[in-house]
Length: 320
Image 1 (cartoon, rainbow, N blue to C red):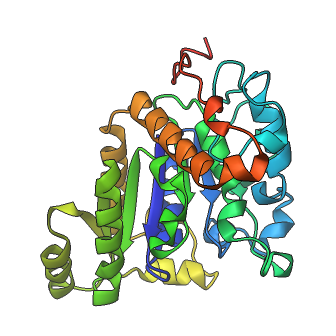
Image 2: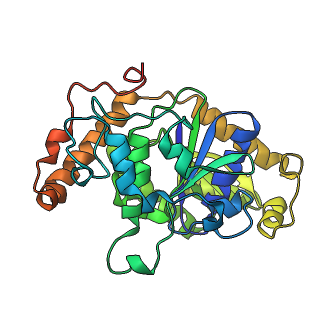
Image 3: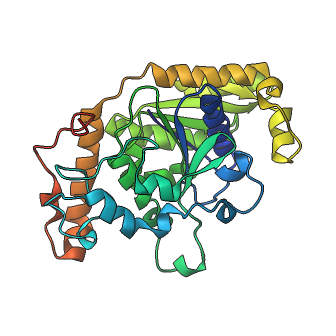
């Protein structure tokens, strides 16, 4: 299952991404965490002490061309890496990946932080200023998810960019469940309204996770503004604050019972949500056609709509 954490900057979505990833990993489930935020802090939230670059994991954003070469495989509809854009969907001959499989992409880009395997997109640096947007770096994540065949009981947890900026690419349609982290403030729920309206257009499932709740008034505020989309909430956490200050130990024993329960609710929600391979692929095709017609055909001098393989069957069948 593919899970996105979104929300306003400072809402705690990176912290929740890390807590949920560790919650899954401690259960023994195969899990991959992906830092897809312009502020690369997921490694630190998972317990890495130091700059993300010191992980030794090459960022996806710096190797998108190599990722294209790997994933296009022998697909005759994709003549070269230059002809492949981040929305190009898989077809017959494309290289499909298993989660944390024995392949070049996972071997090169995944490093463990504690008990959680992690991939990073890379930071937005000075060489990008005035030249590229951060979503160009996210192309590696979108290509990866388009070509990933993950099975039951496997999890990819992506910490997304903050705010409604997450809708600047088709990546937001690549997930089975999207958890929107909202603080009990007017600013906290304003991002929820933006995301809700965009997501409804594409049938994207959103569940709101209240965060930093300090009492009944906070919870009532969230219920008033979010309604039935409010799935669960986490209380203000001394353990999380201690972890952020580098002095917390023993998460499974020390994280507040209410917050451990909230993490279990998130997992139950994910596990009871069936994978719809046809819908995932249909969204991928739709956004590829949009990009091809709006800019990519002109940029490449090719008809990239022809990259859509009408005979391709999404899901596990091509792997078999």
